[in-house]
Image 1 (tube, rainbow, N blue to C red):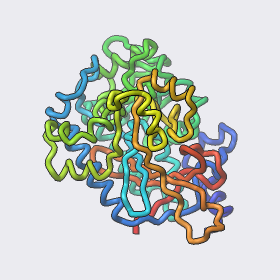
Image 2 (cartoon, rainbow, N blue to C red; image 1 turned 120 degrees about the vertical axis):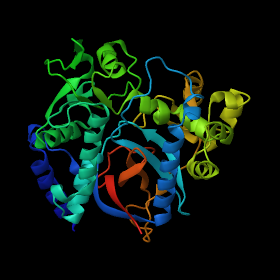
Image 3 (spheres, helix red, strand yellow; image 1 turned 45 degrees about the vertical axis):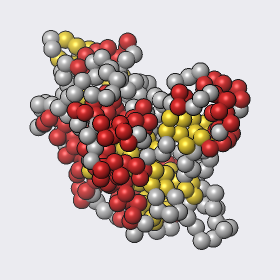
Length: 396
């Protein structure tokens, strides 16, 4: 449909889906979702599906966990993690490369509304939302919490100031549409009393939908939330244990090591599926000296091990000597530079000629529930360009 019509329909659908959006200034939808559709070869999806299944299978094995550095309080839990996402770059040859695994990924609701707008499909008929509801119910069941009328606390820090605050509102309205109790709760406001985890308002929590980037709940102000997780007073999803298994960026280094995978009990098929997508990733100690890293910087990419949302990431080609020296003093990982693919276009005069995209696959356990592209200009996805943002992807 024409672009202006797409955004008109999207806005109308969003307000019907989430009346809470009326409480804020109308978002710049044309910077968050795109009216475009991206077509890519099916082999990319097949590669990603194989890799996700292999990564999940390997991460469940005792031999895998036994090789990881132990983190106090981060122990196995019966539940998994809702709304995990695997982010990939691709190339013109139809190959896919794993950039990172996210355990608190944003964009599912925006992407769902975008897809429903394209297909003109009703909310109640949209399969990815049905699957998402089932994952929350499964988490509640695995943790033996109330599934009929659960109380869900949506948490983060400074929630109204979050870039994706509008999605917080969407989730709150979506949970309420099932008759579930729900409220926002700042992560520092949780309390433990009489063996229960309570919100700041005193409501007993069954499940925390966790958008916090204190991935291991290490900060002192999150002590009550950590206690609730450790003692299973409430289901925390996504949770620190799943981050420990797959989201911690140290795993990118380990998963690229065939010897590590063999010791972890991976099959030859699993090792091959993972090897297809892993970007060579290293600690600083892999290199003989920082001078060697500086010399090779143009082929490298630097990022903190606990970063999120593209924060403090640097392409080696553009890093200054001063920034490089600061990075060498931090706990970082170093990846081979694997550029994002440019938007395919047959017209060299197209405004999209210099746009890039990455792919995000929303996953529960080892199943992909939703695939979406993010198109952008610049170094990282930034939601600053009109007609950029979450974009429909079709594998053909």
